[in-house]
Image 1 (cartoon, protein in one colour):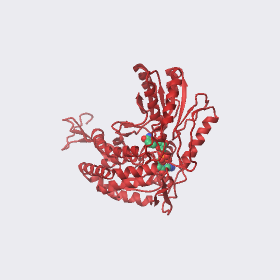
Image 2 (cartoon, helix red, strand yellow; image 1 turned 135 degrees about the vertical axis):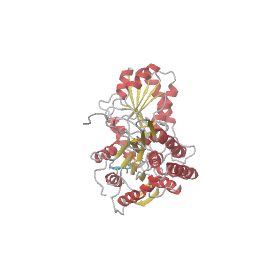
Image 3 (cartoon, protein in one colour; image 1 turned 60 degrees about the vertical axis):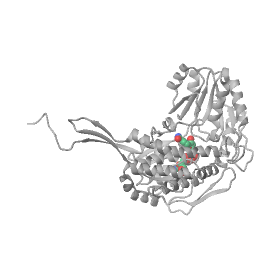
Image 4 (cartoon, helix red, strand yellow; image 1 turned 30 degrees about the horizontal axis):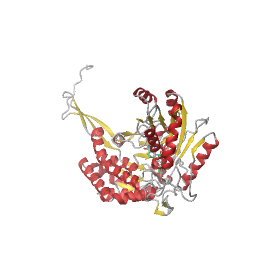
Length: 487
Ligand code: NAD
């Protein structure tokens, strides 16, 4: 396999392709020190190994695969603190958040077992005279899982666990910004008895991602990452309808604040939605759309709360609310974006501050962009919240929909009738009322419309893209009658 296509990320951390001796080096954002170093993998070799191992894995009884996945959950439990520490060091997120990510990794196993049974288990639609009509599912084969940096264990895991339960082999390439976490996660699968051929870790950047997508022996790509990369993958697979392609991408998510006497609670939901994980969540609220009459009170409370947020290193005491962004390049890009908004009509409510130019710590920032003519419809993957003032609910909904993305939209406040209107007219895969945009339920489907996804939601519905249905009409003996048209 050779790498083709173009990288959609502009990342310069991805090394060269197959056979390369290039290295991936991962640094801790909070300190700049190295946490992991390794050679990029030979993608062709990895896919061939998975292809050889796949038939025996698919032939295992489902109960065996489920048992091995439960053992995987136990391996993660045993290593929970070590894994959380690695996540915290490698992404810069606070320990409390890294621990929550590990809990989600463990919980995914039982959720996926339930989802498999509910969505893709065998069903018999009986009709006595015609024999039996059965619907069963088969695995696709070898699936590539490409993970993002922001939840480097949980998000790839939401693809890997259902893929393995369904009987696929997996070649897993974590983000080049979080290989230490990816490797540790893979080892938990391997220690549980799922071989390193069936669940394989590969190290690499965009070039290795491209090589995986382009590989003949890959039956599908399960991707979580940015819209640019997702579009590149989609384009590469446009002539390959035989390959399954699940794309979970970003958002430019709106949160609308409407009539409510509970301004303090509304502000807390806004802050939680915008600044959890330093805004590095696909579900983060990027745009606060607020009713004019509430503007002063809401913005005052949001700013006051954002002023109190501690941002710091993962192991600081007292624990920070949020850590740094992933690297200096991301911090530079976000700073440039903030300056762009300021110089194109935005009014700073709270400036983006970078206390140390050598490290990617950024303060939460809030900017009113109501007066901007053309707000760029891009995902600013960091702690920048835009505020837009509107007069009525129709305008608020139109503003919420003023994006090519469509992952999450939340309404805070408003009457049940307002929420009905919002729900019916807002375009997103997750629509919430008086709940934050972040923290989706794992027992439900998770995905978006527009540039946020390709109608293959993950979460509970991941089972759907990990197997394909086979419909069978079945009778123990041939019994055929041609009733008409015989001479
Ligand atoms: P990214 O797109 O830069 O990288 C994701 C993965 O794709 C990495 O493993 C990377 O090496 C690989 N890759 C990069 N270029 C490639 C190419 N041309 N071909 C094949 N693979 C390639 O994303 P990121 O910066 O790591 O993650 C942040 C993004 O992920 C944000 O946009 C965020 O919104 C999104 N995200 C989405 C969800 C969701 O569920 N919808 C969840 C989390 C994050």
